[in-house]
Amino acid sequence: PTRHVLDIAQRRRVDLLVSGSFADDCICSGLVFFRSTPIVAEWLLTVLSWMYEHVYTHDQQSFSAFLADRPDEDNATMPERISSQKLFLMYLHPEVPRWALLDPVVEFASARVLNT
Image (cartoon, rainbow, N blue to C red; front, side):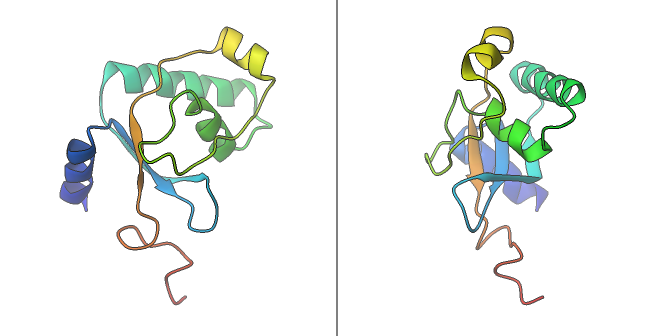
């Protein structure tokens, strides 16, 4: 699927592809494509640093919250909130890479569409 994922990222002109939830308007951080760019590297370092210092926060919530400043290309998701908006944005405000969702039903199958 590597070629397919690279094609999607190129076609959509995004640096980050995140799997979508099949049952909700949120992301699923289980499958993610990161293009190697300075913006993605700085953003991911900030996310991981936050998660290291705030171990009580679920990784998917953190990931979603750090994407909040830039909606996905289809406006299909709602970001999570993990901290007071004012405090969170005051200290942590990395540039968010352009991102889009990976199709959770047809192209990147989930538990909902698999007969398991």
